[in-house]
Image 1 (cartoon, helix red, strand yellow):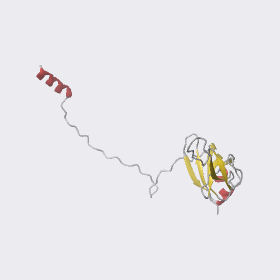
Image 2: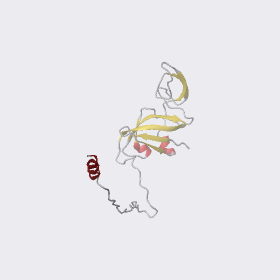
Image 3: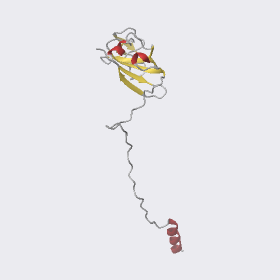
Image 4: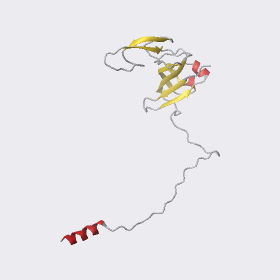
Length: 163
């Protein structure tokens, strides 16, 4: 059984959502590469179009767009995905996954290219057990009035004493 986590990001708003795909939906993404565009109907999101922007395999190694295939490879990198620069000009040998989605891919990152009718990022409101949502009740507090001496009167009386 193959299940992916699909991380959907909206570049306009910056919001993301994670969806767990079923076995059939996961198989629809096999052999797609980073940069490929697919329709949302394959993952039951009609009207949307997504572009694959990255991902990681089951071991946690990141997918890189410049490494072709599905296998893990050790590459010499200067920067980019999976590299943390510690000093200028440093090169590192890193293990990364290829740019193709296959059965050992654990997570696929996609960004929205075309938005559908249904909004993915709205959160459902909690519903009570009887199906009716109740608004929180506000308690009425009696207004307490305290008589305060006027500040102008204090200043006038202090000025009179000084003269």
